[in-house]
Length: 367
Image (cartoon, helix red, strand yellow):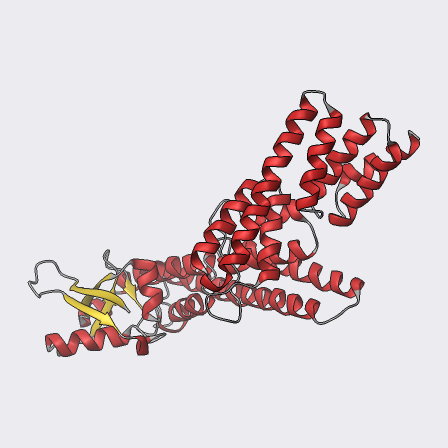
């Protein structure tokens, strides 16, 4: 349960704050329930509205969770004045504030809330009430364009979800690739409109992982905390999707981060603790062995470097960079056929590995 504090909007009024402990049954409830609770406790008779601390009105039909997430757990309650409602300038200011709030919600991927906010300007804003000024018309235009962008972005997200699911439902490799490419394209289009959406980031990374485009997947995940994909059973994670994310971090160039993320997951998901801990140990070992191989190769000891890379591949045989680095060592050691085979392995693990594609024929020529 969460706590919300309601205060009067006018600081000169000495009405005591109201501290509400929100029950679980209020999940998804509109902000109007907060207003009703205030009205009942404070015995108010006027028309009330909810606002942020800076006075920005909050639509009554918003879920209270969305208001708290956007404006914090302390909100304000104001009383509507007829004179204010009849003031065209105030209505235009309200429209501008609502459009700005809706745009912020859209960037975060809160499509339902953004849709409601844009519609409020279109259906109840200054222009809808007969204001013919340029400012009112501009606000209505912004709201209309925002509503169109919200609808299109939500459709792209739905497409990305659908294509990822359909890719799981077929064994045809070419069809799987087509589905994943469509999911990736839809997620990237949606990302242009909602760059702060956590869900879109996950969809893009999931498609890239399934396509084995590991560095791009690591970039899509960014430097923020990586959320574990939750399993069907409480306190578990989805092992396939979780392993893909760890591979993206590792194969994208940071095996140590993959180990840290797996350790953090082990602490959070009790029923998947052992699996997460084993992945943390494995990726930590890969990071250590690869670092030793890199150091040996830089020192000119290709034979020692190849041994370190081979040991790392025993821990993770799907690491494309380890296969490629081993190929570089074998080429220096005069074993071009083995080097070519390592390049082929690197390409199996990462089909877009351009460096391995270029090194492979060069190694074969050196026979």
